[in-house]
Image (cartoon, rainbow over all chains, first blue to last red; front, side, top):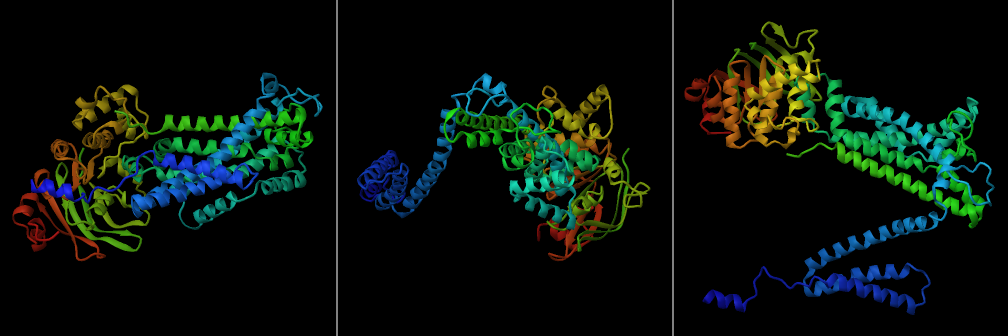
Length: 354
Length: 258
């Protein structure tokens, strides 16, 4: 009886004032309305200023209202949460608008004909033509680059994680770090000076692939290294304790355990170099015709095709549409690679099912 | 068949740090020898010198002799890989290979080294799983991943994996410390059966366990942190637990320190 009266009179110390669930939505709606209002009144022309104003208002209003109702600790919590949301939205807006814009402009000429024909006898101002030669070139150049850099990169990573001790390993790690920072144009110039200027070879898809290899190699080494480090040491010891030689332990226990992550890393590296333009421009030169042989004569590639079409279009017309359609194809290609990487990672991940 | 181990004047280092100093002992075939002692006294380090796993740790280095019957494991020209085929090991935490099925886990040692026929492999896998008292629990799901088993089952899977390659000696590094009492009992029963075929050395923090499973017990201690661990005494388990010859052993066993 006395307890009941006590708890009636005094609020429990575990209970605190709490704002309703719709509070955040209401503040968000309010700040967007206010942001729009302010920018109209002030006559701001830009189409994103209202959103920035709304974002700032949202964070401020959340803090002020929460700290007066719920207290400072909850206010800080809510401000942190709303900051995360605002940053998330700010990061997503450019991505979403990029995808929207590319799809909107790209679908105009993107069809089976576009994907299966080259620019062979099509003048820049004419409509028609396609990107078959560019897709072929990109696939071959990227494929060759992957063919060189994946074995070398994976083996380097295995050396660094499983064997590397002392100065050599440190030096390799250092140079891999330096390679990560090489601008693509510099990689292109390096191959240009050695392969084309000194050795006297002509431009070819292979020359471009070598430059792409320089860009891809450090990414493959880094990601594979991280994945191999994630493999628990106990597994290596278990295998060694069974009397399995070290190289077989690496081949049969360590690599299979990490293969999902390694594949993802390789796919991401491929996606990264598939969009490179500078080295291709220097070394492959581009072509309007189908050239299936990557070892001689200029080839086309998707990023360069986009660049050339856009450059020649002057911002409108058939070439301009083709540039957008090729961009859409390139984005789709990279997205398919990413999805494939995720699929493989999931498929190869160590299973825990019962 | 089981082999005898003869250790004399063994020092184990991590880099320049002497972790275990001057150990000599004899381990008879077909017995269970338990290593007890406070944490950091070098029991596990010493255990790992018995199949040359110590040198897998970066900086790990060993001086002295370990005779397996009449061969020095640290002699010139000895291949550590062949040593580990003779002296198997079970670790503290169950560590089945996550990418392999139960069957492949048990067959791992054989598959990764030699080329055995499928029918032979089937027999060995069944025999090893029966030897590890796991057959009845997993015979219907040999193709499921080994990581789907419970902790105790996983540890018995690791034991099956270790005995599948027919070692002469089986080292166990606190094999029950991550397990519940029921699984621990299962493993202890298993140790009793396995000692018919193997020489078994087990490191344990659980003195009751040492008393239950072992024939001989070795007590390790270290003078202070940063000092090397030493073998204080080794004797029949009954004597160690009833009437040890060194005062420190009695203090440790009766719980006066440690």
